[in-house]
Length: 388
Image 1 (spheres, one colour):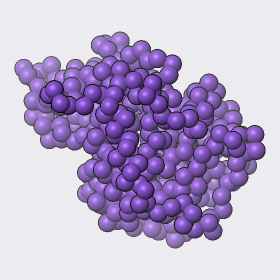
Image 2 (tube, one colour):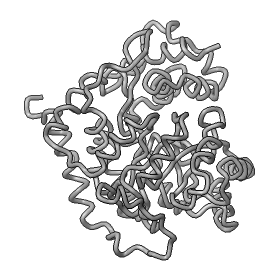
Image 3 (cartoon, helix red, strand yellow):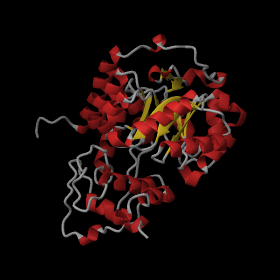
């Protein structure tokens, strides 16, 4: 359409809406200060920026640390030295080894930061057992935030799971109850109904149109919002995988774009080395610019065939019943993050019926992505990578 805004204008305009709406959000100064707050390291104070995580009262740095693909504990130790105070892991990351590494990296400095992890089973007894294992591996007696992991429908946030979270909170094993999701619009009302306190959600320059209103709804309800997958990693072209080439300015631009929305309390970008850490740290105190918008506009064009915005349009459209958006995400783990085991592990959690489907058996694909993702090609790649 001739009157449609350009991609660059969309990126800039997409920030103005949440920024304006958030003017009515509760101010940080109104939050309880009774929580023990980690102290910032003096050498890094000038660049540190903080927001309050919903009604929890936790003052978190706007750039946190997503530990999912970190294998070098010295990077985590350095991040603590710099004053980054929010760290996210999960029971299943790196085959269960990530929590152990994070715990060893933090050591006695656990008291200086806020720590979050996630559970993956879908029974109350199961997640409580996972929590005890997480606390042991992390070397701590409590988590600041404990998420139900990767839930995408209201039914998955069952009363049984929420009651188990309440039990853990009453026992002092967790401070705040959360959920992580790749399908926020579908669960936002259930999150508010269940009185969950924190949501960790995919949010980036490519997903703003469908996620912005839901994030603002959480914000107005006092639910703390944490952004993950802020770089919109997509995986690459063809059988070889790999990322489409990105300019050096891309990662800071993507991170700044997300931070620029005041409804986002913190972000958890993955970091594997000191260079990435320092780059993300600098972005914490930099403004999103028109030059950044141009970089992201160009990136949108590149990732169109590969990146799933998790808009929900494809839900239920596959004639074989495949979870299309999830499978595109599994490929992203392998091709975009270089985490083949994580992609395969998620693929193998699907039913055997779905694992055995081959898209090449269909003459045509019943799913058409409104954003231009090559669905059949992405699902075929998942099957080539992960199927036994």
